[in-house]
Structure formats: structure tokens, C-alpha cells
Length: 65
Image (cartoon, rainbow, N blue to C red; front, side, top):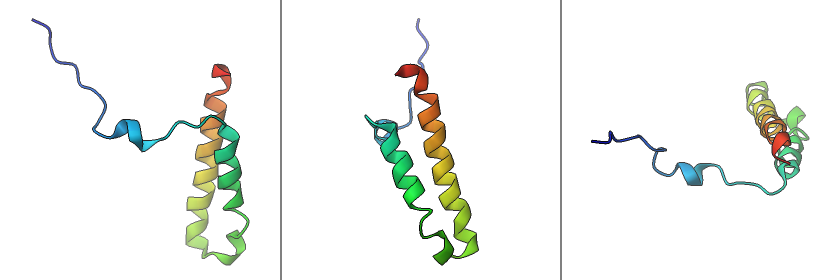
């Protein structure tokens, strides 16, 4: 008898929309750094994390080009 295999969590396919141009996410994340000097220091980490995430996604998709 086959054993059940777990699938992705509910809503996982909607969590991260697929982008056709990975540069769009990078441009948006980097634009968030433009106003960095006006934000409290505690919020800087979130902005840098967003840029890091977008760069990681773009680099991981290079082989799929």
C-alpha cells in the first residue's frame, strides 16, 4: 500500500509570485535604500535583508536562463 507523501503547505504556491524579470525585484529593493537615511537605524536591517533576498533569488536563477 502506498504511503502518503506530504505536499507543500496550503497557500505556498501563492506565497512567492514568479517574476519574469528578476531585475524588477532587485530594482524595487534597492530603491528602498534611497530613503535609508530618513529611517530609524533599527529598520535598516529589514531593507538590507530585502536587497540580499532579491540578489539571492536572481543569482539562483542564473542557471535557468
